[in-house]
Image (cartoon, rainbow, N blue to C red; front, side):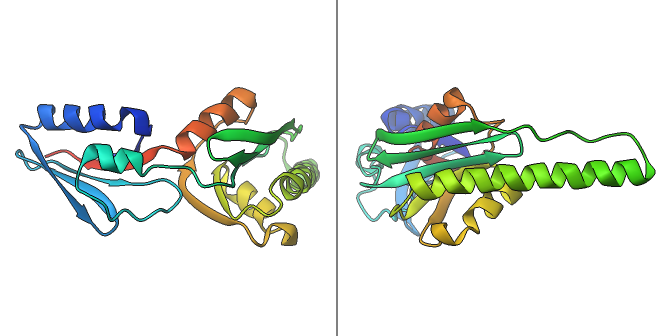
Length: 201
């Protein structure tokens, strides 16, 4: 089953529902994560956001309380069609920028025209990534932890900018569509959520 992102405010209910659905569950702390082992053999492993290691009590409430955003962090979403970048202070949005760029789609034409088309598309994509890096460098200056999403190659291209060398990307990876403001707002919430791997028996 793919990773599930659960907001900390809903975590206790999520654990209760898991236990109810699987005949009870025993919680334990292992490897910096909260683990739940159910009577029917199902289990989950939950990790705190921002690569935070958990070493507290094996209680859902304590784990949820530990899911706290750091003082300064950021979100970076990049696809060929646009980008969104946000600087956060705890759960508060400090500054953001959303930008759209036109990058042509693929063509069915063959031969030289196809090659010319591909070069133009690559140039447009490079310019889009450079614009995203300019805004990211301005907004994320001094920020260490960033949650990213969109297209892996696009995000890597932006984070390769020397001005962003101090940035460390942390999970979860957010598979978002072309980023607009609504997508950015949702990404900010997901970035602060508890990441759960569930194995159903």
